[in-house]
Length: 244
Image (tube, rainbow, N blue to C red):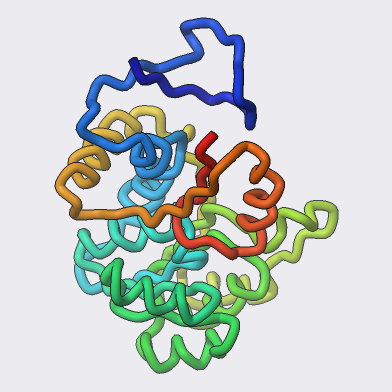
């Protein structure tokens, strides 16, 4: 019997049965249940794209932290909707992965490239949708390049999580008014009615391989501090997990 639950970083746990979910479909790997179907990762990407951003065929869809768990899925889901997808990530390895493995149309390495300049080249008519997981200077750079009637979706702000007492707000927000655009934040639990549909579709896509989630798995509970630091430094691609 395989079960899943929202437990701590521990090797043993004493929990009530109601805190655990029995996994009945053993055709999928355990890492899939912790990745695409785990917790909020896949559902957040699905709801953010399908219910909030709502891309149309031909839209220019830009996603930051694109090599992360949510960002990589959001980009793939947007591709399924017919959007042209541009990912922003840090490092040549991530940039290549987005295009060569995940099928993004283009990628920008924010560590070695100027985001604004690259967007002028890749999206000369402007960005229709920005799915932001980073905030800070990345958000400002893309806000400056939005098209008329653009949608800016705030999913996260990883660049600011260690600076919660002095969060860097967007300095380019007037572009929203100038270009009749909107910026909207969300969390997956704001859309409880969408979760069953999202889960069903994600399970189908994971089963047939039409979307994938990169995984990096560390071995042993002793790796937890390393994994936490690794995640916030942007060192991993996709979903970072620990095998206990």
